[in-house]
Image (cartoon, rainbow, N blue to C red; front, top):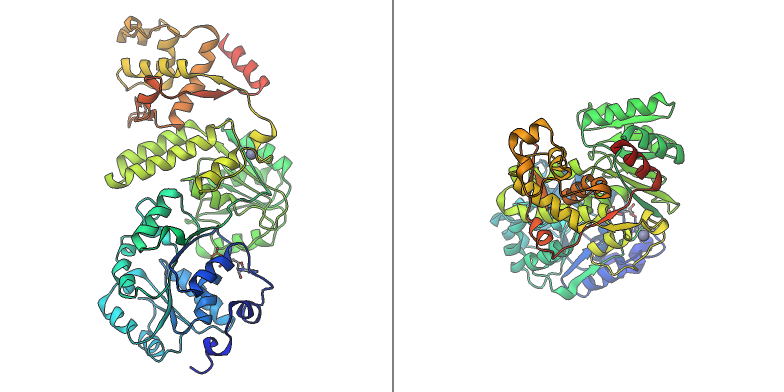
Length: 520
Ligand code: ADP
Ligand code: ZN
């Protein structure tokens, strides 16, 4: 025990230099550490890579006692312990995967550990809590704290069991840490873990060197080819299925570009080899599912593309955040389709437990707002994380070439009415034909030519029908039924009642001409 840092070192600054070898604190680290040193409860919201571990490791060394670190993943804990030991910190894990538990407990009891990592289900056990009373605690860190919230994207019921434990040690400073907390989740973490509102420290989320570009998907093969022609450096393309990653990699390889594949279905050796090749390469394009990226240390990723929508704004931020860690210009390009939203919305209604649906719907709405906006993408993203950014960033597609918009509220109302009047079971094509007044067999046999909405869209407005339908699907005004038809969603009401407007981004000139040509 005499070799412990707590006795040997002292203040956070000298520990930062001598133990970790870093010249200074980054971002919010200092503010967080000051609070913990002062014995206060805190929530640190910092983007991935910002250096959250240091925020509890340094106080763990500088304060007397052992720090308890609650973490949801055994693999993550083992990584952390390995890294801590490498710089001379006395750290251990206490999980079901460890067979030296008796030894670890003995080390804990005699106070020779700086850090003890535990899984939440273990931390909440009564035997464990008795053990905790035998040694002074320097702090309790709750890593991946969004797991405590049903609003979060990764709710773990076990995290709810932590509160009684925390309340048994009211004077031990708690530090909740997360990279992904929107306002709701953050408020929930504070409440669930008994941290005062004033204890929330939110780091800057902006990644100014990343350019955000978001486009409707239209011939993804060509779109990817165009992207690669602009981006000769290494990059990641996220696709939504294993098959899609392989197809994409094949197409890219056929153009002569170095391409790799990564998804959970590959044998572990192959995955590891592909990942290593990517890290070492300066021009490789990794076609991957979201299984790829966690813990990958490659600072010079020049672009991250999405061939379909990510799960949430948090996921988008995290995945695009893998680009440009070296600070040089990098690009995040997202290709979205209305069908991405329809599918996701249907999944929420059919596969997600009732009590989690509101959160999932809100997540999709936030994503819909990002892809649909004619305003600054970065501002939307940063506002979502609770920041107050300038209205324009100068480094996203919309800031660089502001799109023209047109008020499509009236067309949207017509479309929603037509969906309703035709019985909420037909697709975009049929509803559009009813609105346009086409007298085809199907419409005649269904009697849809006798509906009040038949033929109420004419001339130029016709070209707006499909884009409007897509926009309505990014919102929750239109949802796809299990048979592929469209039905009104919860957001339809406000539009029908004239309480909400729908603006459409006009496609660039060339695309408009071709659409008109096709319609003629
Ligand atoms: P997070 O958990 O927030 O994703 P980590 O704690 O894993 O981030 O830290 C990310 C990287 O940044 C690590 O390699 C860490 O050693 C490094 N790092 C953290 N703080 C500093 C600092 N003050 N100066 C330099 N490097 C730092
Ligand atoms: Zn912008």
